Structures are given as C-alpha cells and as structure tokens.
Image (cartoon, rainbow over all chains, first blue to last red; front, side):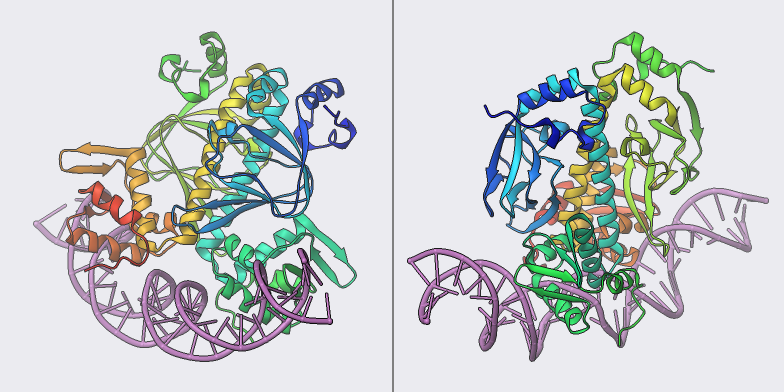
Length: 236
Length: 236
DNA sequence: GTCCCGTTTTGCGCTATCGCAAACTATCGG
DNA sequence: CCGATAGTTTGCGATAGCGCAAAACGGGAC
C-alpha cells in the first residue's frame, strides 16, 4: 500500500494533539483514492463501510427525500472528514457524497474507528469539535430559512462559499469549484428559477459575474449589505 | 455539596462504558439545581461557564436573530445534555435555554470538561454520538423546511414531540409539557397564526384536541398520513 | 368571584415565490 | 467545426402563507 505522507495532514485540526508516530500509525490504516469529477463516493442508504478525509478537490453531500427532492447538506473542503456515519452510531450513510471536482481522499474502514479512538482519544475530541461546529452551522441555516427571504439566504450562501472556497481575483472572489443554480437552490431551500432570477438581477447591478456553473462575487461588500438587509428595506 | 445518586444517571447513554467508580468521580464535580417554570438557565451570547444534564423537566433551546426573531432549536428531555458550547470550542452559548417546566439539572463547570474527557474518553465518544444524532436531525429539519408545506412540517413536529415527550392517554397522546402555537411556529418556520389555523382545522376533523399550551394527538395515525402526504393530494 | 394578561382564533388583502413552459446558450465529445 | 446536452434565462399566472388587526377566550392572582 502506498504510504501517505504525514506532512500533508499533520497540521489538520483533526490531528491536533496527535504525535507524529501516532499519526503515522493512523495513516497506515488508510488508503487513498482518487474520484473523478461528478463521480459518487458513496450513496445515501448504503452500508457505511468507510469514512473519509478529503485531501484535494471538493465534495458535495446531498440528502434526498423519498419523493426525490434533494438538498445540499454541505460542501466538503480539503482537510475535512466526511462519511462519519459511525460517529452517530448509524450503519448507513445518511446522505450521498459526490466529487464535484477531481478529488483525492483518504479512506479508512469504518471498523477501524473504535480502535483508533481508543488509542488516540484526541481524535474523538477533535471530531466532536468538528461535528459540533457543523451542528452550529446547521442551526444558523435553519434560522435563516425561518426568518429571511430567499434573496438574503442566497446572499448568505454565496458569502459562505466564498469564505470557504473562494479564490481571490483582482476583480472579485471566485467560487473555486463548479456550482450550478440548482445547487444553490438546494442549499437555500428555493428553486433554480428563483436563484437564476436573483443572480441575473445582481449581475445587472454589477454585484456578481456568473456563467455556467461559475460565480464570481464582484462586490462582496455589496452582497454583505444585501444579506444583512432586513426584509422591508425596499430596492431601487 | 449534596451528593448525587449515581443510580439515577448510571443507565444514561452519556455514561455508557463508564465504571461506577468513575461515574462517582464525575458526579462529584457536579452540583444540581432546580429551575422553576419559565426561568432562563442561560442566555445566548453569555459566557459558557457551565454545561448541563437535564434530570427532570423540559428545557427549550432557542436561537435569536439580531432583529429579534426566534427559532426553537430543540426541546431537551431528561437524560440529555445541553449547553455543551465547549464541545464546539465556543466560549459563549449559541442559544438561550429556558425551563418550560419546573426542571432539575446537574451542572458542571465548563472548565472540568477537558479533564473529564481525558480521564474518561468514553464521555467524548458518547457525546460525539449524541451531537452527531442531533446534526442528523438538523439536516432532516432542513430537508423538511426545503421540501414540505407548512401543514406537513407541523405534523412532523408534533409527531416528533409526541415520540419524545408524549404521555399516552386512552384517547390519544398528550405532549407532556406546556407548548404554545408560537413555539410550534418557531419549530417549523412559520407564524403562530398559520399554526393556529392548522390546528383548528385538525381539531374540527378530530385529529387533535388542543387548548392553551396543550396539545393532545387524538389520531396519531391520521397525522402520520398528513405528514407523509405529498404536496398535491388535495383535501376535501 | 372578578379582573387582567397572555394566548388563541379568525378575517382579509397582499406578495414573494413557486410551477410550468419555452427559448436560449455555453461547453464538450467527436 | 458542429451537433447534442446540460445548464440558464425569462415570462406569466397561480397560491400558500404572511402580516396586520381585532375579537374572543381561558386561567391565574388577589
């Protein structure tokens, strides 16, 4: 099995408080794999046989209803873990994970988790922290969906994406992976039509520049203003 | 300090894998307190000086926007922990906790957490599991808010409450603590007006019986049917 | 027993947003 | 270079649910 270079991952929060030797031992249990753009890493409902650490690329986690509607649960960025079904004692994945870009991941068998946690308790503590943060973010999302209009929610979503995966250009911030109107709709609880209308509007105001699966925030601050604007303050 | 009886809490999932002696040691660091109905246990934004385990009663965790709108994040039932800001590395509480009934809690100083986790790693693992489950539930809630109509969301919310805190009566299931239309609205992302209308409708169909801060599901199965009904299938 | 206050009910107009339909357009494979 | 395909734009009703307002109600405090 190809050995994984510890220096690539040693600095990750996940491994905070883990000695280099221990890290080496942890990595020895992992294998790495590459997933091409648009390929599925695991499917909702499938046996949770592995958990993952994203090294490179971007992964979209989406949850589907019995009737086929989807929401995007989150975008995974390099350095984050995903597919931790075992952390909640679930035997099956609660969502589907798709590589939105060519992606490289480390893969551990789920069965290794209890042993790893026992030998390296800080893994559990670090994971708890990560999951707690995500819970936090979930609550914020619920709060937004409950209290804000679609335009503000979209603004917040874009700002979050830009912060997480924004590439600074001289003329703005570009979201660093392919993302469609539909994806944004599924992040904000609306339809691709409404997202399209909103982005068209913003584009004509010079706030964004966008195209097929591509969005550049030309005026991030202007979008912050939109995001914070309370429902009434009228336009134009 | 009054000693807490270990037998009351030994069976909780939180303490799974913890020996009786260890449990004793953990409990020695806690104090207990009683909060009367409608009193605040902690406020959003306050210094997270303690974390809590609910022994008796019910606690509502709510998150407030800068503009004053609220959502109910969850209802805490006996045996669950809350106020675990430290788990996500936060120095302040992200929500407000209110006792909705006379409630009894165990209280640990936040500062004790790192030491407890180090000495008793299963605490971290168990907490991770609990937090993971809540993350899961959050995602389900987001999915519902994104894809279902208000009536279905209210149906789901009531069923969840009934499952969590339902008291079986011969003529139905009663939700075991005071809950207003407003509370349900804040759980489902709607207004108290709409909730009131929906409950009135259900009441006239014999599905529920309700009054001031009180709801009895007379026909739980009928409500399940409502909850699962897809958007189109019309009424009457 | 009576008063007061928080909760609930209900009516009515309004509008943000959906849903459907159709045209348009980049991008990629060949 | 060109056609096919997936993604995007836009128009036009339809409507679920909000927001406001006001009345009715129930329960506890004294």
